[in-house]
Length: 228
Ligand SMILES: C[S@@+](CC[C@H](N)C(=O)[O-])C[C@H]1O[C@@H](n2cnc3c(N)ncnc32)[C@H](O)[C@@H]1O
Image 1 (tube, helix red, strand yellow):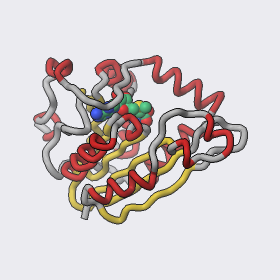
Image 2: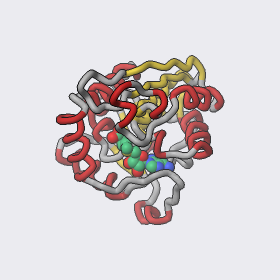
Image 3: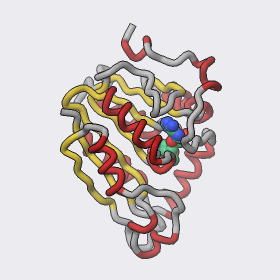
Image 4: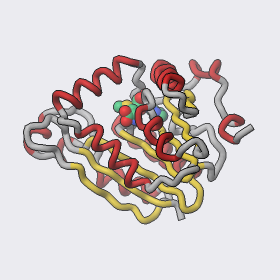
């Protein structure tokens, strides 16, 4: 049995998973909302953000990958295609409906991606399991302490040489133009980068995905870091 399978939470545990993070449980409605927003409001910039996150990861076929706060699994399924069937991709999220939807999508697409109910503050995998960990649009769902705890957990499950890729909406104050008035959440990329460094990760770099003109996309930031 693969290490992934050995360390799964028992699904019957799902209701006991508590978190102070903002949990979503919208299933297909989440996908529909994102699709609608990206198509009609964001001018495709959400998809562009996910694609850029995958590029920044420099994924190799056969890689072991974790998507923390995977929601309905869109990114994880894309990543599975990139790493092929020799790679192992796992997504965790405390939203049981999000995980059910992600599993249904994996089955529909005949992909072996492994989706589990789980939280960032207690990642259900052993030390040094993953080559790459993704966190997209989820850091703004966590308070400061939870971010710290979660980043320490990510550092623990990354292999030496492994990479963390964070993508998130930027905090309101860091946006410009129309985008500054649109999305309520968002992370301060500067603060986040400091927390990533404090978790012991190195080579921390940041990058921007600015909002396009005539797009309601609030602008996103990326943080890349390594475990030495
Ligand atoms: C806006 S969604 C992003 C989902 C997905 N990563 C994406 O890019 O579409 C944020 C997700 O973070 C999850 N979340 C909230 N608290 C969490 C925690 N403590 N650990 C892991 N995920 C959490 C929510 O349930 C939600 O599905």
